Length: 111
Image (cartoon, rainbow, N blue to C red; front, side, top):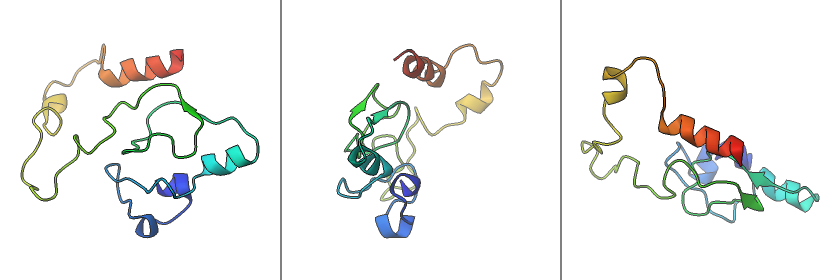
């Protein structure tokens, strides 16, 4: 969010991929649109809530939910989501034939 807005994380309160920024914070997409460019979002942005942040359109949804459902709940820091926060990807490591990330990337490229 810092790179998208050009502002320090401390100013916008966004410190990792599980943080949102207020929709009123201008991004480079706002400035490009104001200069007459067509702006289309393709791929992962980890936007929470507001999904455009200045872009006119989005080709696909994000790979992650647009809420905090996949993030650590800091009020319960020892609780982990079994489907997300585990070592299964390491324990089952080997040649990757398919993954949700590859499927997502192919969808983005197709669109």
